[in-house]
Image 1 (cartoon, rainbow, N blue to C red):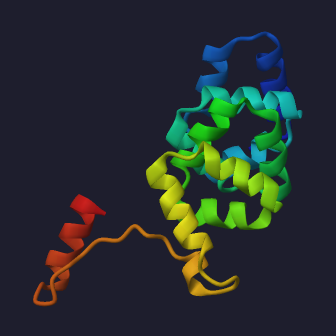
Image 2 (cartoon, rainbow, N blue to C red; image 1 turned 90 degrees about the horizontal axis):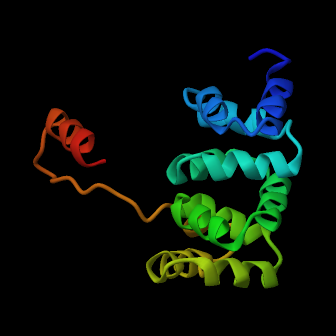
Length: 159
């Protein structure tokens, strides 16, 4: 990644050339995007997140530090925050909600779908510092009598 990329992105955003912006972001890994985005002004970060597909935006958001996440949540529109939170991995969302002030956590929980809210409330219900707060409720079931090859194939298909 070259040092001039954030300046280039800022120029593209200022020109409102969103198709060029999408092209510049398209093949970058979520971790690289998170690093790149934090070099932008907050309003430009919001623009980038609005252009990213929802699942990809959630993946990138998970790599931002807590302060950057909080700033983005405050700057984004309510429906964008709801989409982002609903698409985050449950364990990453729990970590974020756990770090926010209680009043903000309540507001964020209200934005979740009933299913995602139930998952978040369950995970937040585990004692602080316990493995329950860190786990993901997503799992793949395998049979005890399967071979390693069968397990791996099942995970590839369903995991």
